[in-house]
Image (cartoon, rainbow, N blue to C red; front, top):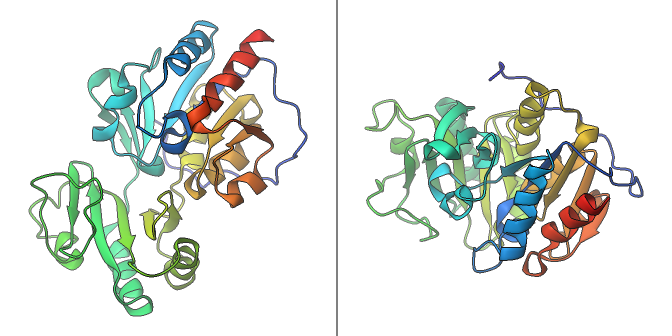
Length: 290
């Protein structure tokens, strides 16, 4: 992979720009976008993804999920086998069981600064640390997709250089608040600690995801495309939540799912059906039909 670069420019979308008849790459989020609500991939979507690859269109799954949660789509990635995980913090090879190809970590000193700032600005915040080898969390952190056997301790200990798993890069810092509205918590966090990391969210609850500065779905996707000689204008992207916004604004053509967050609906060039209606497959079929 090429060295890290600054975040790509994200020009304001042109709402009525026509979709390309045959893009070179399709980038799609998973939860709330490609996956149905039961976290499965429909037969129609499986068929559409395979047809796109046969037609010479590369498909990239671009998700906030860690590599260990990619089993749901690992059988449906073709060609290159790569996926972008943890909101751009990792590129993994799904043909090799999720083996990391590139990691763009959050520095632990910056993570500790973010923890301190949020503890002061939003008392009651609890944290989890997503490292390349698993998740570690505080006792107050809600039981949300937590992995059994993970270390439970204060965030300051989980981020300390002497922590038993300190050799594993930090992919994301997760911050949860039990009372604040999700978008209000996101705005507050960006105000008090935005100089130390990139903040976003993809959960319906007040759960923030923090990456290293300049690390996002958009910046990592842009780098993967540049390595292939693919321009933003040749990319069609799909998403539904704030963590998809930069990717959707970077791609030449973007689709918001019918179930998308209001900010995503406002920022995208096109609309498609909900994730429960195979909205991604509908667009792929239309593209392939010419």
